[in-house]
Each structure stands twice: as C-alpha cells, then as structure tokens.
Length: 344
Image 1 (cartoon, rainbow, N blue to C red):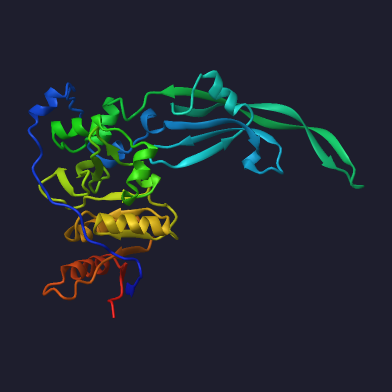
Image 2 (image 1 turned 90 degrees about the vertical axis):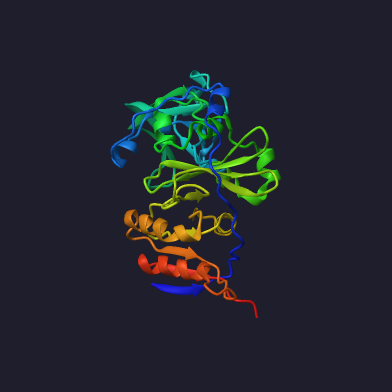
C-alpha cells in the first residue's frame, strides 16, 4: 500500500440528512405501493431477467462497416443501455429486424439472435497472379429477433420493484423516485456541474428540477436517495439509520478488467470532477466516515484491482478527519491514497 500526492482538486462535500416525508403523501400521488418479496441472496437478486436486458434504440440503418469509409456497406443498430453506455451491433439484416418490429429511435428493445443458418456467399479474393477472382464459400448467418419493451423508468414491474427497492426506503420516497424521469439533453447541458452524460444517465429529475441520485448498499440494492435542489444544495431524503456501505458510482459501471483501478471519493463534487478528468467511473462513498466500509466491500469483490482513495488534507484542523479516515480505509484494503499537495 502507498500514499501519494495528486493534482486533482478535492472540493467541499455536499449534504445533510433529514427524515423522509410523511408516507401518506404517496397515496395522494395516486401510485399503488407493491411490496415485492425480499430476495434471500445476492445471487437471486442479481439473476438476469428481461427487464435488465432491454436497451434504448438510438439508430439503425446501413453504413460502411464500423463507419470506416474504406469498408463495404453493412447493416447496423446502435443501442444505449440503462447506464447510458452506447454500443453498435453489425450484421446482415440486423436493421431489417428492427424495422420489422416497427421500433423507432427512443424505444426500449431487446435484440437477440433467434437462430443461425448455414448459407453460401460469394467472396472476392486474389489469386497467385494477383488477379481478382470470386468463389463460393459456406458461412453462418444470424437471424435477428427484435422485441419492443416497455420503458423501465415508467413501468414499475414486480422485477423492477425488487431490484430498485430491495430495502424499504419509504412509500413516499419510492413514489418520488418512480415519478421522476431521466434528464433531457437541455437539462444535462444547463447543469454540467453535475457531471457528464454518462453520469446523468443514472440520475432522475422531477418536474421542479430537483435531481435525485440513487444510493446503493453493499449488496448493490437501492437503499437511499440523495436530492440536489435547484439552488445546488444537497440532502439525503431517505435511507437506513446509518450510511454504512452506501455508495453511488458516478459515470457508469466499474470495469471488470483488473488492470483498471477503482477510484473512490468521499464527496460528490470530487467524484464528479475525477470522473470528468479521467473518463473512468468513480465511487462516491457519501461521507468520509463511510469510506472504509465502501472500500472493504469493493475489495471483497475486486481482489485484483488497485483501489485508489482520493482524500483532502485539512491540516489546519485539530483532528483532520478528512485525511485520517481515508488513511485508515486505504490501509485496511492495501490500497492507494491520493492527496492534493498543500499550497505553498
């Protein structure tokens, strides 16, 4: 383990706590409260289902393969997953499958290989003299199947409720989260201080412009909400009695590649800025006191990754908890600590 300086500026933390609003307000929102059965293990909770396979359709059509003008024309479909990550799939008739399903950009769809057929195709090649020739070869062709799915943000299915509300966070707050919607491009551009488009993909916004950030527990289940008001102030609006293990990953999912370090910050502003500067997802641990619990949980599931904790050095204070607690956290997990150098 090691400690090192870094020029990334770690700024002031947001947040205070308050008790959730009266749950009777949930009824006035006109939303039915459904109590899904709690899962008994993380394996059961994380089991795949149709709801988490769906992606938003961005575009489909024909273009040079991998958009390289030197390549031949090919059919493509561009999708965006629930975390805002885009990917483009290529294949014969893949766009035709989307057209046949009458899917339009913005629709949530599942796109799967229904079957694989053996086909014969003409292939061009150059013979020993360099002359261009053609020949027939056998290959396999995927038959694609597209299905339109309901928008997961607007359809609180039993599976979605189990995923989103594995911990009871309060009826009214659940309805607030469900009633809020993903931000549009105009909102993201106007409030760039809250992060990139990938960071915004995990937020929701209500009609009054308040932003809601989901906080997950050590089992990756939604356990609390953090609200950022229109004036920039932030506050926890619901959650368990303590924040041990609570976190939010700014900017997408953590990489499974053990060569990619995992970054942790104890305040939201730092996490957003580190994500913006590095292009990597950053774990926001909500509070300095919570760093050790979050780091230990990440180490449990990422034994080969380097875990880097960003801290501040409030050297003028008597206790200097903003440095002491991160030091305890990185030592506990055999990690790395980065601290901005003191001004001279």
